[in-house]
Length: 424
Image 1: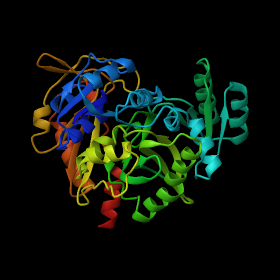
Image 2: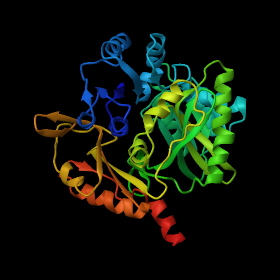
Image 3: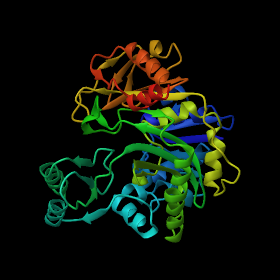
């Protein structure tokens, strides 16, 4: 069948890598795509994914049998609804179901209604009551923009001044809404589940690094690197997450008349009281997809089709149990603030010579030249028999890339490597 992949980031390059390997994939289109997705299929930068009628017409003209929506914005905008209404098979949640990512307040209310473990919280749509609340609660405390913020709308405030500054910045925007949460303590991990509206199956684990600098310092970003699997998520903890977080979420969404189909990505805090939900994303993560897809040993396409058809009975996604994956994000200088675009990138073939994979995100092609065209630009991924080995291979590949204007963290995977060393 012909498959259309929506998106242009590193996640979409990783998904293109996996989708194109399926025997069921005859042609792969990516809209708009990037120079990396072009290695696995045909980019369609002319297709405006915000124009749902145009996407529908393209699918009908090219006889697309499956649409896979990569990023969150088209999901929240209702692309799945409009394509499904036209009889086009599309993987991802509806507009209403995508509120699990599109509105942190929506998710918090669902958690409260269905007993899903999460941080204590309060919602605000005005500055003064929010300021009163944080002053009463004290620091540390977490301030979140209610809507989509590309992974950067969260402030973990260690002081009241930081919390108040974050609130003032958010409420400077008209129509702002915020969620203020207690600060949870523990280790973070990411858990993925493939859902068909009624049931879910596990779809891998990972841990990422949100802070921009080594040692988890500096502002939050969309993710500076990740590794998979997250060994801290033991089989017992995974079963607990499925039973206490994923299952009641699906049940609650069904009860509300908005069943969830797609990828449910649970950001977790592993506290002394057990796993608690930090927030949901409603699609594969970025950069988590860049470590999940290289470890995936089963065919992704039949699983996505089964989810679309509302029946995951008998479906299992298999990941290489012997090998870990680690990805290092290379970002443009200045990220997560303003960056300079257009710098030349060389050496990707050399980086991949020993088996590493370089997934492209913020790049563009200028004739034979590859140029940086965003904040997070590359995700350099390697496999190994341990996280330590995958880490060494990934950084060896990074060293072969000639891009003076880029930078990366040098400690991706440090917790997992330390854990491996302790376990001997």
